[in-house]
Length: 368
Image 1 (cartoon, rainbow, N blue to C red):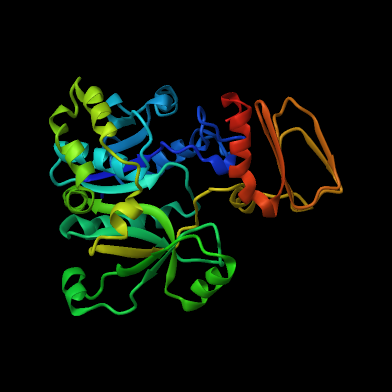
Image 2 (cartoon, one colour; image 1 turned 90 degrees about the horizontal axis):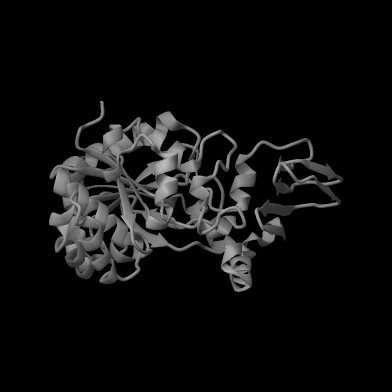
């Protein structure tokens, strides 16, 4: 049964540039029905967390630029459940803002922080895993991140290495039977050779970007490791849930540098742990990841739209229904059209998508 002190903070402020041309600044991928389920990624994420905490304890962090989209897609949430950022400052400021705001309401608040655009195939296992982690963090001053058991040497994810043995100190803090492990190090997205080594070693997990901690603990860590961000929000905490909040937050954000929670706290704190998990997870970060998750035709193509594919294999083709598209002789390509932009790119060169976005931006803001 969900505790009244459990909260979900869903981060929905990203742009998802690796999913261009579908993901745009004014309409990022979390607001799309990428998987063809009839629900957008953010709607699916909210429903997932409704199995973990009460709906009134779900908070959405997003950009003021997307305020109308958020209200439109999540009509059952109250206005105060939307934490709207005046500008993008990466993940640390938005996590500080949400932790301060929820702590102002509930001094026993226990939080799970998650991106809005991930895919989970085993919802029951996801719920069980998050609940276990929340029970651990409710009474302990620890920061927990979920580490996904890797199924392949993937170069698109960061990795977490954990300590095999528990020290006497950590046994005392966690208990002998705790599934949580001490983090040894965080590794950036590796080249293939290193990813293969990570997989062979057996003590590396994919970094999911999902965090669990109690509000008081994470605020202590901000005070220690990111005191400038801590001070910016501490000074305005009394304005939360009042008509003065927006103006105060604008001022606070001018005092915040852009920094991720990973660099700012997770890689510095001595109290960081990882819970190994396996619930059919993908960050849905790239066209390749969408290709892997989608149903395919007899030629291993993923096709969405009014498309005729001749002598075409292992492609992902996504185009508007009102446009007839005929392709012939394509192998291992991405063909993606949305509104005013069309991208055609070899699948194994999808890392170029960010470069394409830079090119498109020079052509005009309407293209990004």
